[in-house]
Amino acid sequence: MQLTFEQLEGKDVLEHEGLQALYGILFESPARMIEPPVSKNFRAWLVLSDDQAIGFKAGYELKPGKYYSWLGGVHPEYRKKGLAGSLMELQHGWCSTNGYQTIQTKTKNKWKSMLILNLKHGFDIIGTYTDSKGEPKIILEKNL
Image 1: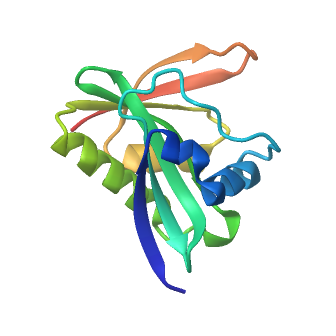
Image 2: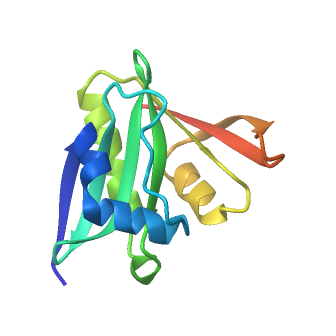
Image 3: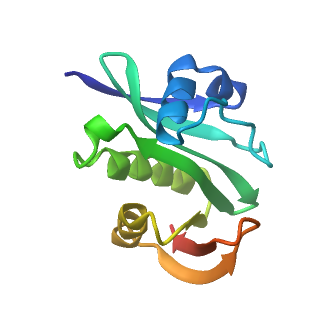
């Protein structure tokens, strides 16, 4: 198994067939990933195994100086290998190099592995709210 990492930007994120297929698996959805609400610096970092997308981390600029880590995940067969953390480090490195001072993300308590990963990578819980489906969400932020 040969792993490679790739960075996509803008429409290339939405047009990458491997990423779209992985999105369907991770989010149990026949629909394709939609364009985010903000498209400034919309990017995705992918990890590929023998040219097949097995993980990704996507985000966009929330406001000047603040980046939002929007979506991500690793194929179930490739979890527990540090790939999500590697993708996070690539994203955060790019953000830091490109002038962002903070990065924000949101998760749900039911996704404990994602919550723990964020905490291990320096995020702090800065708030909570209830989403439109009535589910509590946790807001996390990290200074870069």
